[in-house]
Amino acid sequence: MKLILTLFIITIFIATIAQTGSLQAAGLGDIEINNQAKSREEAGVGPVIFTHTQHEKRTKCSTCHPKLFKKKKGANMINMGANMEGEYCGACHNGMMAYPMVHCDKCHTDVKQVK
Image 1 (spheres, rainbow, N blue to C red):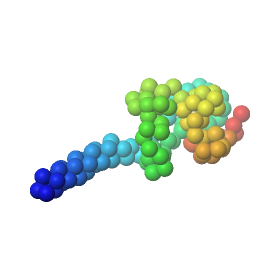
Image 2 (image 1 turned 90 degrees about the vertical axis):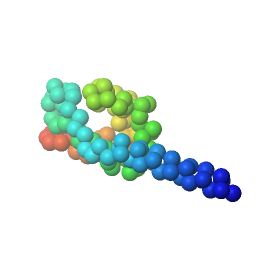
Image 3 (image 1 turned 30 degrees about the vertical axis):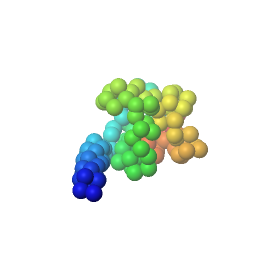
Image 4 (image 1 turned 90 degrees about the horizontal axis):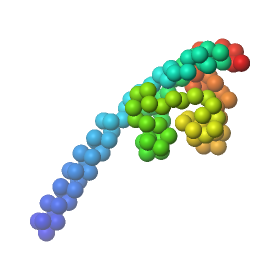
């Protein structure tokens, strides 16, 4: 009985450490996506502000990483063409799982007149 109790306590301890470690890895806040400057300028929109914290509340890390996005700054060449083909953000923001990407101001800052 003592052995079972000891194993149970160790299991709970390890599970707590594992959970705490995964929570510390998250919490990235907002991330500015500021590549594709020329095409953004031509389209009349500013950079994207990706609300990582909001997405963490709604989905698991494995939904996006590494399948849709590499976990390295600058490793993902996100662009609207790829998004519209269902890659990157477009995998979910397709009007069925999440709002469609026709609402430019939901992601892009400084939306002027979209061309």
